[in-house]
Image (cartoon, rainbow, N blue to C red; front, side, top):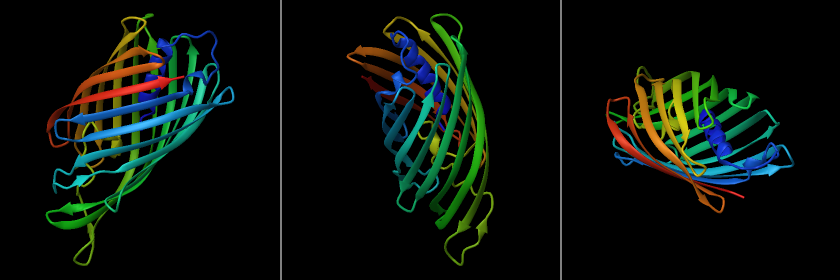
Length: 289
């Protein structure tokens, strides 16, 4: 559910670009890479490519892999992610949809569909709507007992960005999800279990996209220090479906490295649902041609 973040990133990259009356999908010919890792050895790596189709549409595809540790059982999970999407854009609007699947053998199976509609009524203001649908299943152990938890639901949200000055812009997003979950004991005759927080045991700021979030809020600002450098600060606050919260603050920079490359290093600090906090680092690279 990264539509607000992708929207803000698109605005940032658009602000760094120099072109006279480009096609609405001109910025969609790009390769994007990103890695994250925190002090608890949770990590993620993703790669995505997007290509324009005609003068207004585009297609995109991505792959990724993450690694996290279950706080209750100590087991490690390494799901692989595949994503496919696309969209269409006009001079002041764009609509997109993205479908993704995560798999880690029998331990995790998760499918997501996210859609976004963006509108830019003026040159310095952008607003949008988000919608998401999720279904998934995770298996693990609690107190030595094998359990399986299923989750399904949908969510809606809004996001927006405004350029306060030629150099300073702010953005924000909020989303509300409605999930239903069921947890079943898979040994000793089965049976439903209540109040089991299986989904949140391995949640961190690095792999928050795998978590079931009842509410999520995001607020950030971007300062364009020069034609080649932009600095960004961002706060995120989430409420997990199983209880507890997840929060993070991060700082990053977008550096034009020449020959179509933009590098995005950053650092952050996150706090998980059990109160444990950890620092994390991130590094992104995008190539436009």
